[in-house]
Amino acid sequence: MRTYSDLFAVREFRNLFVANCAGLAAHTTSALALGSLTYAATDSALLTALSVFGAPLAGVLGSLTLLSAADSLPPRRALTLAALIATAGAALQAVPALPLWARFAIIFGTAYAGSITSGARWAMISDMLPPGAYVLGRSTMNTSVGVMQIAGFGAGGVLLVWLSPYQVFLIAAALRAVATALGWFGLPERPARASERASTARTLRINRELWADPRRRSLYLNLWVPNGLVVGCEALFIPYAGARAGFLFAAGALGMLAGDVVVGRFLTPAQRDWAVRPLRLLLALPYLAFVVHPALPLAMLVALVASAGFAASLPLQERLIAHSPERMRGQVLGLHQNGMMAGQAVFAAMAGVIADRLPASWAVAAMAGLSLVATVALTRGLRQTEAASGAEPETAPPLAPTPDGR
Image (cartoon, rainbow, N blue to C red):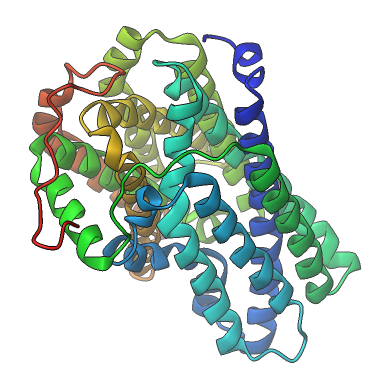
């Protein structure tokens, strides 16, 4: 499977892709509506930022409690449950008299439900596609994320000109309902990967086993830390460019899409492995140019070129799958997703603290420098993962038994 025609000929993937797009559109439009409500009510930039970007922090709690549900529940049931909760949450946000604390509780509750089941979505991609096609499928899903974020924020901005935030929430609820229906009726049910019940004890035990393996530990750190620090650079686009920050965000999204397309569609497995090192350096190196406060056109070029480096995460995820047993794949990928999103939120806040003390351009360069340091420091541990193929190894370590069988 090498082309998009081959990929979208798989009906199951096609339905998952459309459902994911509908959910992303709902998330971005409702986040913008909630941000406008929060700012109007509080005049607080911090609370507004948390209302728009803070929900992924709920993934930390998900990773420490019921992340094992990604393997213990049948995948279609897990995704449908999370989609129903998100639909109900969007509908509740449409209630005008709802207090702000309740709105925050809803977004964090919805994000928590999504965090414990998200791994099932990414694991399904490896199930529904032939061996070796995961990178193409995941890169295509990544592309949809960038496109729908741009389209969703743009459409949300236009809708808020003509409609109230509460009406935008109703539109988001309708989109969530579409995603729910597509997931339930468009995906065949598969058995759960694990026979054990989801529990906090099981989640923490598997997390410890995942972290204990030096190859997986290295892959997680390389996927979370350098990328998260560069997201901190992007978090400073508004302080840097003001009303023109949208041009920087668009340039970064375009670069990320281009990188995903090239790595996911055109490179062979051997070429992807070779590209990991230069792409990891490319991710942060161009942002050092911000130390001279480049004009907007040059800053856009920097963001475009640097964001192509995010594509290094595709072969690294491929290695993560190869070094993990199939029966815990949902939790493996869910932990990656939750750690990535939480790290981005933490490093974005860190960038804001630095920018309160330094000019925004210097803060961007400082975050890029930290990302480069992290990239170099983590390279040694990454070398032991280079022999991974696209298939699950036969020698994957088994789960340690527990007295109660979980």
